[in-house]
Image 1: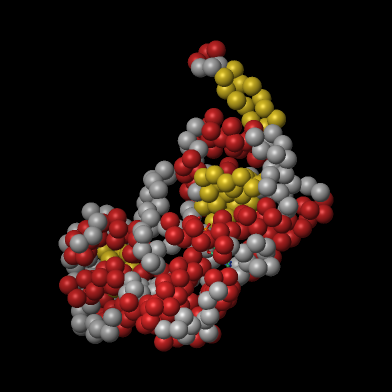
Image 2: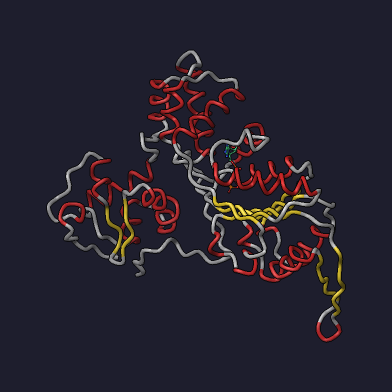
Length: 363
Ligand SMILES: Nc1ncnc2c1ncn2[C@@H]1O[C@H](COP(=O)(O)OP(=O)(O)OP(=O)(O)O)[C@@H](O)[C@H]1O
């Protein structure tokens, strides 16, 4: 049993699990349909991320002034924070077309060669989940980024020959949720790296007011604050909660979103005031009520909530850890004092939150 305290150790090519929850950060089908309409179209419209925005603004304006193609840009950060949106803004600020692809779609160097050789001068190539590209494609990308050239290998074995292919200058925008998985030679070839942070509630309120305007929904300041506080620092989740609250407001009230409507709607959807949903609370409840706050092994915890180990580890835990409600320790998962108070429970004397003398439950 591995009780280490590191983040989940996915293999390089393992997909980041999608969760399909109302508070999940990955995009579902409905999100994809409405996101295009809600995306900010310029840096000025893009809310928050002040540092990245300011730095990127300089990079783009300088390139425009020189009449050159912008440097390659790497954007890292959790899902739903606006990496795709920023890549589209980069293209539009540079008045360049954009081509969108992703690491998992490029499994062979030939796939990448086909894309690169069809780019136009100045075009932006957005490569989402760049950490999931195959190694041969990655190596081809090094040369393409640095020298705007690739070697296409024709034939196999001793008779194979490399045919050099010149590429027009282009801007690569790579996006990754896991910058640490990128090999240094790839990371070093980006002229600018922007790390996207989770959004403060006040920034999410601005996102919500903007989205409400575009969706033609009336929302007041307290209603927006109520939704923002439950959105886990993520604009995609804020926009999704807004759409569900809008449904409730239309069916149960006069369509206007205020604090009472927002709170009542999100109660129906079981998203609590801190943004935890049913799965998050089930994990905490098991940890507190069945195991006295831990430490408890991940597998035991997963069995107790009737979920797969991976679901608990990769879907529920990251947010609980980020919120300071749960800790991963070498001896197992433990609840923090904040977890006890979040669920309105009193820690027993021996619990880690109470005395620092943890009990121990098996794997
Ligand atoms: N700064 C922002 N201001 C306003 N809306 C935003 C902002 N960032 C993201 N959004 C909205 O959040 C949604 C998700 O953004 P986006 O698709 O760019 O995220 P992402 O980081 O690329 O996610 P993923 O990693 O899953 O591809 C979009 O609808 C977008 O309009």
